[in-house]
Length: 136
Image (cartoon, rainbow, N blue to C red; front, side, top):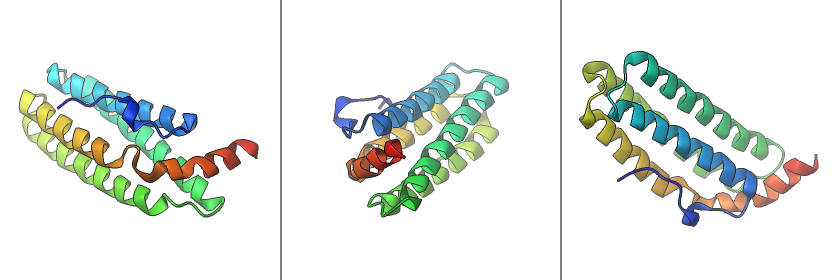
């Protein structure tokens, strides 16, 4: 299975969809760097970029929730926790074996599974938050 954006993932909220696309693109870059057998600096850069973006993405969701009732906050917390677990397991595996196809395949499978469960998830419920966020 390969991580990739699909029209079925769209929530209808352009800012949310753009964030999801960016997260998926960074995941693809990370998996591709490992699949290519890239060295530590390249993989570390892709891992940092993915991790930093994921933190920003989930922080925006939490900021939205702090502005008012956010129906997707609990869902996002579960998604964030599971993603952190996937990345922690990946890190251990990568540190043991380096850039080998099996590590890339496992990460791709784990992230693809995560994406299928959490994107878009109930985030279409975020539309009111996104609209309010743009207004002020």
